[in-house]
Amino acid sequence: PHTFTAAGDHSITAVYDGVLEFLTSTSPARTVSVAAADVQTTTALTVPSSAVEQTSVALTANISPAADGGTVQFKDGGTDIGGPIAVTAGAATLDHTFTTTGSHSITAVYSGTAGFGGSTAQAQTIEISSSALSTTTTLQVPAAAITGSAVDLTATVAPNNALGTVQFKSNGTAIGSPVTVSGGTATLSHIFDAAGAQSITADFTAGSGFKNSVASAKSVQVSVADQESVVELNIPTDAKTGVATDLWATVRTSSDDAFGVGTVQFYDGGVAIGGPEPVTAGAAGLSHTFTSAGAHSITAVYSGGAGVVGSSAQARTVNVTDPAPSDVTTETVVTVPADGVVNKSVTLSATVSSVQNGGTVQFMDGDTPIGDAVPVVNGIAALNHTFTTTGAHSISAIYSGAAGFTGSTSAAHAIQIKAATGGGTGSLGSGSAGSSDFLPFGS
Image (cartoon, rainbow, N blue to C red; front, side):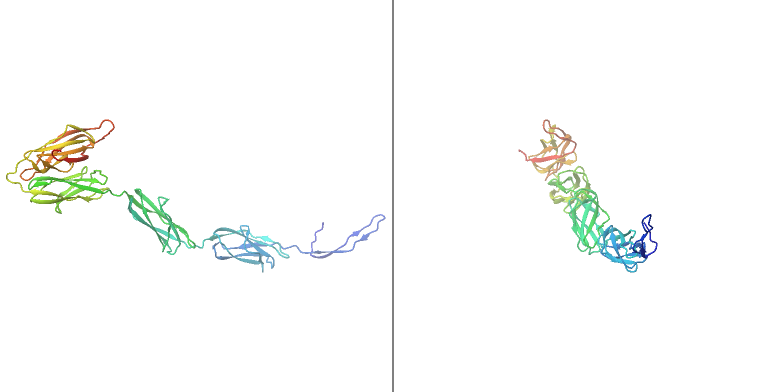
């Protein structure tokens, strides 16, 4: 092998020296054209460090030493981008538009040309960001809400021409369907079904040309809806001026539960009488002395309390008369059985001395009225009552008085209510819970 050290045409011959009986000889000359070796090149890549998608950027390859010929193929992660670019004065430039966001690894491969070898540039990274507009989402929610009642949750998206939908979430769980943004806002009417603190967020999913955004969480304190209340008056139909008369109001929820919150204000013809009386075990009472004769329209207004809304009783009339000098003093005696069984009706009766007809009797279990006031007929008032709690119940009877007769209150008598035997069961406790029906005399 022979290495030529100079370029140009080289005339090559071969000379045979001969040996013994063989003569020397020389071959005809042959020409070998020896070209100079290609110059080794380097390719350097110039790209911006970042760009925006859908926006043209210049990618430039510089060949050293500067060549004037050949092409450069630019590549994105090994994939050709654009066609080969002719090298002029040692440089080739490609204007390229990236269509996807993220990191792109760019290289450039120089093909070489006469006298110049090919080379590949070291990869350069360009970060492509979205061309979409940034958005911000904010929440407007009420500080408090009631279970079962609808409230509006509103998300405001800026800029207000942003397209997309908002998904509202409560404690991380989607509520309702995605709401389309219109004019920069999206509103969801929502009913919470559980009490407690609810952390509300809103996720904006953008349409074309905009970026997604998430609102900071806002808290809604959800509480259970207040129960409705029912107020009923237990008052005598008759009273005397100058004589204290007991006015009672029973207060229960719409589900017939007794409770002990709030107060009751009694009214006579719209004018408050006495002060607000506290509700205890579902009842409030007022001992009131009428100072004028005539029909008095009595009402009672319950204030409401924690978890219960207020309400008013239907008005009832008390006929008040002046006591005559000859009013007869009465005596009331209550008669009750010694014992009874829970949830079984027993008869309570009161006998009013000296009175045949007129006035009413209000039966009491301790300090709580049971049933409505019962008219006195033939000197007797009777009430069928069903006790719903076991134990001792102290029963008394208050006679209202009537024209020519004074009112009176009986001594208390105890009835022992026992649990039912066999299939029935009773709940232990105290109070006058039960149902009552008055008995017309002779029934």
